Image (cartoon, rainbow, N blue to C red):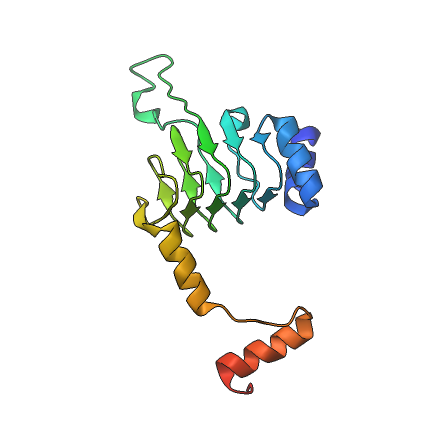
Length: 172
């Protein structure tokens, strides 16, 4: 691995959000405004990835822009298949999700943790699983989130004390 690639990996893993987004843009990823990106797995063709505005990509999300064609390499000199990945505005991609080529997600969609996205994700939906399937609408998910909402203090120690009391009845 050359020194430039090593520096890119370090910036993606340990850099601020500004550094991560600047580095990804330098690699060719198209990124909109107000995004949060916590992964470094943009594959070998990052220039085939487009991310809209107000998108959150969680830890260890993997983008794959090509097909697996190894079994055919002896038969065909250069059988390859590439595809773009587009994440439209106001989406969230959960921890360890994998996004395969030729996929468009959203807008206003959520991909659940550890999901494998093999086809387009409709707008205003939540998908999960392997392969990812629609599990509910965004409105239904919002209602579930509102039911579970806890109004916790902003101070970290006060929030910790509140959550311990709420879930453990005072702690251990």
